Image 1 (tube, protein in one colour):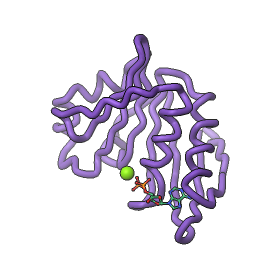
Image 2 (cartoon, protein in one colour; image 1 turned 120 degrees about the horizontal axis):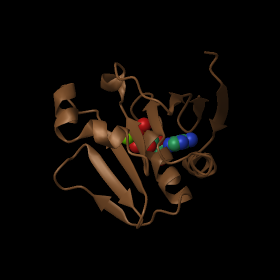
Image 3 (cartoon, helix red, strand yellow; image 1 turned 45 degrees about the horizontal axis):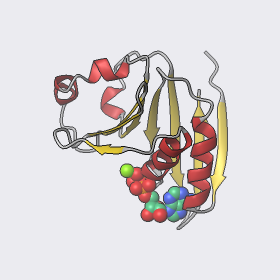
Image 4 (cartoon, protein in one colour; image 1 turned 135 degrees about the horizontal axis):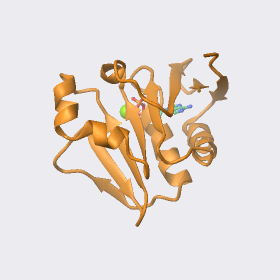
Length: 143
Ligand SMILES: Nc1ncnc2c1ncn2[C@@H]1O[C@H](COP(=O)(O)OP(=O)(O)O)[C@@H](O)[C@H]1O
Ligand SMILES: [Mg+2]
């Protein structure tokens, strides 16, 4: 299937946050977002804007699972994964990874998703980050 790519040049962190806020408003619950790109390219910054854009304010730092931060309202969830330190897929499965990925009232937004590339995920969007220079980033949304 032909992929649809939208590119954005960000000139500072605020640009990235604003772009992520706007992006978040077009995303349905049940979506899984894979964020790829080098360390420092803006994945976590983007996530901050994304979470804020959907009106989530109660940041919950999960004490048990350092690879997952959960944000919630009374009915909806954002599951923010950072799989940088994940050694094997079994660690992801043990914390109920599949259930998170298939949640209908949750959005998974995932840093370092490479280990999950073998999963066949419906409703997946890829966001690719590229470091251009100190403050400049290229962000590609691939649907
Ligand atoms: N245009 C930009 N967009 C996002 N972050 C930027 C930008 N310019 C500079 N930065 C800085 O780069 C770093 C990005 O870090 P972070 O979002 O944690 O990246 P990642 O999660 O991809 O490792 C932050 O220190 C941020 O202030
Ligand atoms: Mg990060």
